[in-house]
Image (cartoon, rainbow, N blue to C red; front, side, top):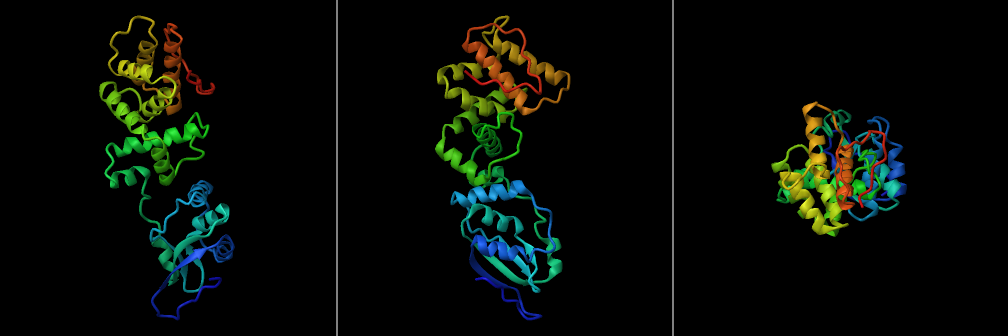
Length: 274
């Protein structure tokens, strides 16, 4: 369908399901004369899902006013162009122009919401750990958030790496015993360290949690001291620094090297676990 039929005045809006090609999306965007500023990250997120075949017809419509003005859907249409594939959409025409003011007024459903609806245990922690692991695997070692995973990408990551469930369990358990480290970072570190030495990872996080069997100069003791000091001094420590603390303690332990203090400047490169 290359043109939109406009209902006569007084008619109810019309609804169709249309396979929107990149060419059709470009044509419709010419009718985008009154809309919000584009969010490039949202377009990229949508386009990745579309290109990967993960986009689903979910009832969210591309909406047009009775005079043909595009009211809602500009990000999805730009994503169709970026993805280079045709995507089926519900398309609503014949709306009053003023209805645009009430569109997208609700809060976007997050990955945590989606996992919760599926009945996943610890859905919020699961979503946050998946997000951090996805970013780490993309090379965003400082969790800058320049690109973040969609719910579909989180789901696919969990499907490929079901062992992440165990990392989430350890993150929750460690936090219950020692509440000074973010669960999302602990779960991410557990997943990354487990790929290097699974047995050592078990002992490492058990000791991070309980602090037992640690003599003076032990790397985990230095780690626990550092994060407790940060909390006591009300320092605003970003997640990537917590990740760096864990990696520095892990690397020292693996090298059988004493560690009295852990430091990580904000502008320092992220250390890599060994």
